[in-house]
Length: 194
Image (cartoon, rainbow, N blue to C red; front, side, top):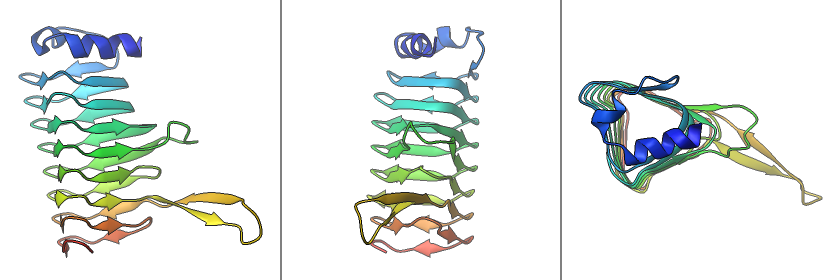
């Protein structure tokens, strides 16, 4: 059923999609979906939102508020619950991913007016929260939520994860690497390459 819904979303115009009344799917007034694959158990898109062409969205839950924009060529995949607030933007060529074999569902929450620009990588092995009005600007920043402990005497390793929290009104420049467990307070600017 989920695959059938994904194919229907890819091939049908948004005018027809708005008329569909099915469990786990809602497309708000004046919202549009381009030629993108959205494979998700729950899809709820608020009014006046746009999802551009050639996106691959394969997650457990995808919800977004009104006036939200997902540009093009974004890959969003994994055992993740995506929750986007009002007027959020994920521009283009970003990769947001988590393993499908995660024991528990993880969450990516972007609050109102948060932005992700071009070519950033988000590892959602653990939760990520991006506060209201915060922006990942430029290109090439990475947010990591997992790491490994390696045994000093054998080839064994253990994966460990911690959430990443970005406060409100933050500016993250190009090529910034955010490690697991980092909490960035409100109103912080992090320069390029940090």
